[in-house]
Image (tube, rainbow, N blue to C red):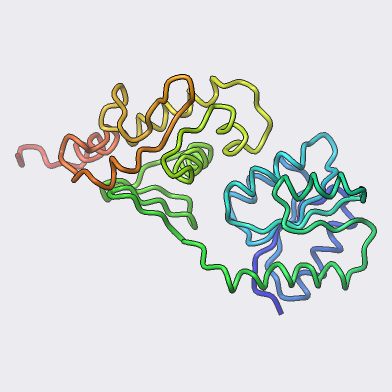
Length: 255
């Protein structure tokens, strides 16, 4: 019997219900999505251990979504597809799928593959959180705490920050960030700049002279982990948003 959380993303309503029913009967917690727009919200809300992903969702790019989920590093992916050529299978695996099952398939084989993937969960000790000095990133609840104060990030800001931290201090181009941190295909690099500016306003002491999320000329952006690990926090290190929250809770005349 399984105990993992599984998200089924399948365009065929009959197959989606059938897969969901069998998984529930096997003891898994199951969430179902009919398209990628709903799938993204469900994924971010419930953080499933395994995704069952239809490779041919109508009007969507399942491979792009698969790549985005794989970059998050939090879930295994079993891709389902009616295409069975070597090129199709290779494309799915390169997009980040951990296994590829062609339609039609037998339910026993499907459940066996699910069980094989979920067995890896007990062997994998993925961190529940990341800590860089005063910056704490809760990967389970997708929350960020800086100088012991929670910072209100949007889901997209959280994904962008997480991707930056995973680059080990190496700069990432705007194109790389769009591919890794966004679930949908976006070609406008200004989108990255806008979200970087928003992030800086929330975690930098001086967003006009950022020291944590740095601009690398002619390349893109990098996460300066050394700044967080080697420098002790001082009052001037506190980001503007945290200072504002502290001021709002201070007692008049107490200073």
